[in-house]
Image 1 (cartoon, helix red, strand yellow):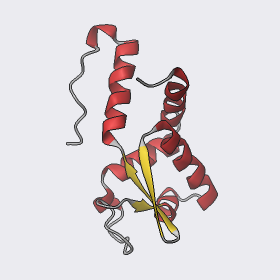
Image 2: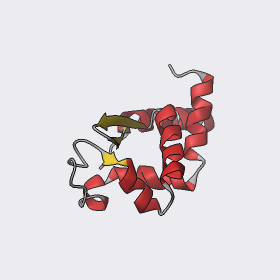
Image 3: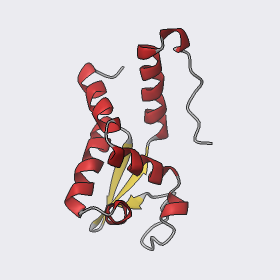
Image 4: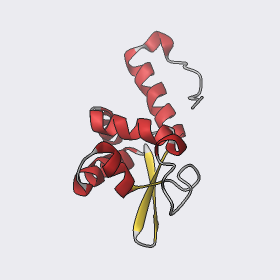
Length: 117
């Protein structure tokens, strides 16, 4: 079970259009980041630099958004050489959505498992 403070971080993560945009971009890494040459974006993740470019924000701004998403458990970050790669954690996002539904829609608490399809 996730602690209350972690839920607050997750709520904060979802309360930003920029962070939601990142999650949408990472949902289809091949479609949005096919030009990434250093690693397969779907298999390995997307370079933080490319995410910053896609959002049209400075690298430190993108890094802050990505750190909040990582703290919330919605992305995994993997370092390779001098780059950091980000990948969505769909299981964690689905678990959060089920928790949120149970909190605000108690009669619909039993949502089906999250599917990326």
